[in-house]
Image (cartoon, rainbow, N blue to C red; front, side):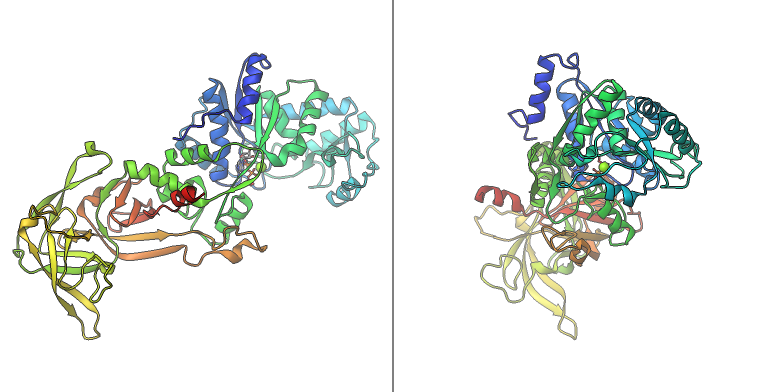
Length: 555
Ligand code: ATP
Ligand code: MG
């Protein structure tokens, strides 16, 4: 991994806090997802940052579900998030928390603020609240309910809690300043009425806290030292600090950093939900999705994702990262670690006419030239093989170094062959190619100094196994899918191509989900989780061609 040499601005703040003993030298972060969707690569940035900081400074990092909105949340999202964070390689030990387990405590804190005259029950509708709020240039107006007595507020708030009012009919608001230059300080809502069933607390609660009210309390209760969040919360920091100060309880430090954005995709749970619910993809873990589950199914490794996040760096200014950089990171990893095998995706049969009819040879094939310690495997060779249809041309330009009538090419790990005859059906389609082989070229070389330019991959027609192979490209045709309003208009109709008649070398019958392979000359592939013994399915993770290295060199 390309570990940065310098401190990012967050590490600088933390080192200063350690030096000055601000939190008794403690470092305690948290990753606080809302369980309303699967995690995406943007979340990976927050995960790597929070858990990474804890690792670096021998501190702690909590996994905390910010489950304050029962309408959109679900246990299945909780489970997927737990699985994804663990898969990325991070450990929260026994510190898995739920905001919902603090609901009682939050309620008590709200009562404290009411008693202090710092919160009130308001009957304005959400629309009216918006109208009363004013704008950046115009101060807001006080709510007519702002001056209710403490007793009245306590009474109404308790009734709200007990489910005595319909949804949305009242709110609890902080009493701050309706002409504050920061709109978040104009009597922000702390609780709204929602008679809904929560996946953890069931029907116990009829009021649910807003993000601003809940998040600072969650951080404070857990003794978080550095609360790292994305830039859109910068304007909320003042409120985060106000609540904790008014309650006179422990105050963490909120620090904002820029979100990760990636070309050719969208990173917003709302949009990803639309893709799933609209059936534009097969699910949250569709291999084209920028979700952790999608990337995993596609064949990405935790190492590659962490390496990618490391390279993007932590800043306060927004930027969009090129998708090619993510692909570069997975290629880098798989080039070093993926086992090389042979697979023919679009087969055409080759008959080697001078090879004995019933002879079979088990040839030695190197598993990974980048890792000689991975050794060799046996690949069967016989009179009939398959090669890639595109590797043969009847008439070819000079630069075409593959199979052409009369020309000799090398079969990887096997022999030199020369094409002598082409068999066609009555419509003129090529159905078979006939070649002869040179028995003296075993292993794919001779000692007579003969030059053979092309090397082709192949599989034995008698021994190969059938598979379906899925090729993926970007989900969107535009670098910025949102550029002209509706991202769904920019879906790439060719993001998935399914090849049904692929032929794989027999060793792949033992392939397992989670293992990565390089299909020689064709890219990196992995077994899909829907694969069965009867129907093998492989996903292409990425092609072999690296566009990022080129960009980097040019830049
Ligand atoms: P989305 O905008 O995709 O709906 P969110 O911010 O609502 O995401 P949360 O579950 O609240 O999703 O996010 C958990 C944490 O991950 C938050 O601290 C959030 O700031 C962070 N996060 C979300 N998206 C990104 C991103 N693209 N880059 C970096 N951090 C992110
Ligand atoms: Mg959020």
